[in-house]
Image (cartoon, rainbow, N blue to C red; front, side, top):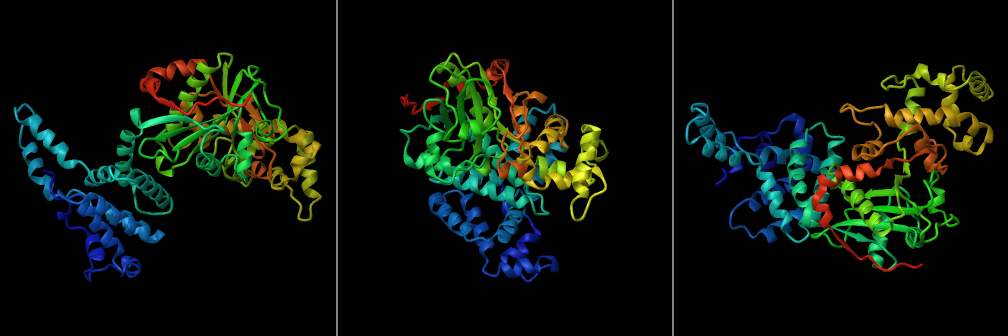
Length: 480
């Protein structure tokens, strides 16, 4: 039997459980917790870990209590949970002493090691596992991890052990027979179509009628569902079947876009991939979805031989080019190198434009910053001609050369597709692929085609053998 994880002596016990020993650092938080919400919630989690507990009733208490926590209380609760629902030192001392005093050749050694593994298993993981067995439990855990990830962004506390417990559980739950693929069509329920519409953050829709442009003969939408959450997709992808690679988003989602006739399409364009559950961040379900959709389309339409994306480049302006133009030298591309991508006559023209402004600018980077900060440049044929070659080259550097601390692509979308096996070249950088106000503010209007080759499909086929048996639901006949 696993030792009681609540036998340790932790500083959080004093402030949460109501003693008067409160440090000045925690005093303001303790005042906010005068109703003991966090203490009651921790106690509910504790009860769920005990044998003979009415798990359904306790889970109901947990949901009710958790829903009342304010954001600052959640941060305090997560931190307290790490300390309070944990293995105590006393629960390990005897076994560790026995192991340290013994030789690994001792016949009892394998049993002692097995006992150690049992004892060091996170008690939080066992609680999360019990929650996942309850009706609505999986959705609760997904939202719970989403809150942990959101809190970690601003919290000084390290919540990674709590996050890791949930990741271990999700990696077991989100595979094999737990998932099924469903095609969203005009025959799908209104609720499912509305969920897709509301969850598309790549190309948001204002009205449900816009989904009519995303479905039909040459449009597809596929979603992965979990059997414990059959009414809410966990990730979905929107696909346009086209003649050749599309480089401008208006050719896909605009009402007057030219649609490929049935049988004419030779390319599948993935133009919107959305994870609907923040709690699944990092679990790479998108790779599984892309693989299965590619495989499904190849079986349905033999003439589809090219698979590519038309992807945004979020952060290119705000988090990359703009900081560089303001002197940030933390990137591969240095501020002093930007002017080298422009011919001399264009450098002079950009400086001339800045000098005509009220405040004036006397260096090239500041002048370029001034020009690109106003989306009006995209309406000028002159500026489009001047900016297209250098911005295309700089965007390619951003996608292919800029790395984060883990030496992965700095841009999250590039990292997602390139980690999945897609390739990208400078010819795949599309200038003004999305000239909308949002597109210009996010990425100077640039979009990217990431190419998924047939070799990629064959390469990962062996990695996801179980995907061959993934159930596909709701493939209805389509409007011709």
